[in-house]
Length: 326
Image (tube, rainbow, N blue to C red; front, side):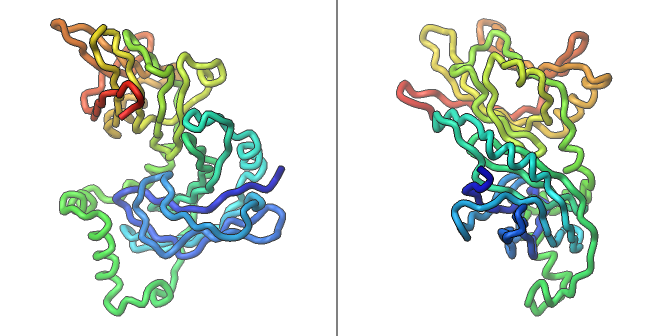
């Protein structure tokens, strides 16, 4: 089977607004292409699709090429690229699919996400329920485009760009941070670094024996069954950004809890870079200890000789109902 039901969608990182002016995913058999949604200011999050356009035949060939032109507001710069995509890899992933715990069945991907970022970074992911997989990363080139071809706005280019940035970032704090810190060129390429790490739970039982959602800084998403299967344990992963799991409370009258964990990017990135030197295998440990008669929850990154306890983790907890989950 080489035709699948899929849509195209677009993505850009938060706080760095972008706009795709034109784009197409070219079918591998030369029979045509599917356009990448364009014309909207994007800042929805790296790897997160924004638009959903149902066009063309339900079942379509998969692409082997991406043609894209886009504008980076924070740089006031156009970029353009024509990229060969790894068709055989994309086809194999669509054909293999994956098991969806929520749907309780085998399924496959339903969207192809095209992401653009400052500096000309371009990424392509396959999107499915519980799973987003990166399949391509490339570098577009700077190009000059006649401004009147981009917008019919009658004011100056400088004002138009400034207003779009202010509208996208919303708050004076974020706008000031952009002016102060500038654009982190290379960040989106660095997100792709993969590490040899595994989750570890100490005095901690998962309610359903699985991390239900794990989002990575490189835009990927997955779930992880626990204990880990051999193939999963042996694989490398990007740095985690967010995860959700359910804790089985060991106390007789204690309520099971849903835990949503958001990591601080600077803290967790520095920790991985520090402890991974020499390609050491790492453990991301979730630990519960009794301190003064109360449960103390901590998260740390560790290897056999050293550990770093995270101090800036943002944690939300929710009770789990008897008949479902909050």
